[in-house]
Image (cartoon, rainbow, N blue to C red):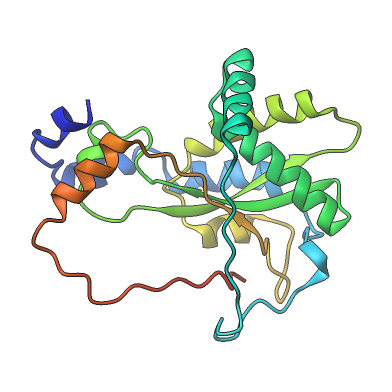
Length: 216
């Protein structure tokens, strides 16, 4: 499937833009207003509010998921008929809630920007967007959290083209407080996908790349 899709022509940018406008700004405002208007206490892990600066002091760590744990995750997702992404988002919500001492949490979810776009996987460019995901944990068991996470993600995907600034304005959080200081980026790729990317970048020289996670 990956190799076959690489043979199709790229989706024209004008078509991508036309499809991305199917949800109006007013609809975005109504959605995020309903989700966030009463959210006025940010869930800040460790209570660390200073997240600006140059990012030069930030450390990076990597941890591979053991094969047996990965298998159990996939089995649990199949039992619930959900994507593993839902389980990871639910786990992240529980982590943010524990580290912030809050049972009503909002964190950023990084979206591809291509969901719901017919032919979006063939559009050339970077369309990623980060938007707030709110989950209420009080009195809920893990299974209920997982199911509510699935519902919240499904609703959020309908608005993945909305500007983050719009979502921030719709919330009850007021400057200088951030709406969230933690985000989660779930990505899945296969060996086939990696080969397609490698083929698409033949002849391109990478000059420099860098990342910072000091997200305010």
